[in-house]
Image (cartoon, rainbow, N blue to C red):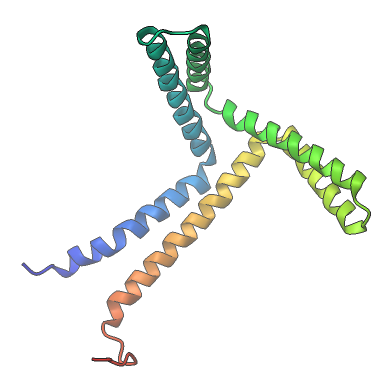
Length: 174
């Protein structure tokens, strides 16, 4: 059975269009990605907690397994109720690490370039500490723009392949 031109066009353009839609979602609504990551981690923690508790009940549980299971369950349910807390917490944590490293670089560096780099790192760390959600939104929006650009490039490439057919500049070796 021969493929129709419309079915062939749909097969070639379905993936690039899906990538472009995903990029637009990230670009327009970056909080959806942060919330999704928080919920996924929450479900993973809940399942991990249940596995810890199940292992403690069936295979000679120690207090450490029971405590680990309860902590995982508590963190998992908390993340499921507050999925955006993950973006805030990770942003602030990374901001603290970046600010500490920037101050260390400023103090220890002998060159002016090293001191400037340390100052930039400390300033970016302070921004992450003070505005973790804004930074998360910016990062996901930038990722959405990049994904959208990749999808557009894929679509253009696949449409060009369809139009070109056999390239007359290719030399057949056989």
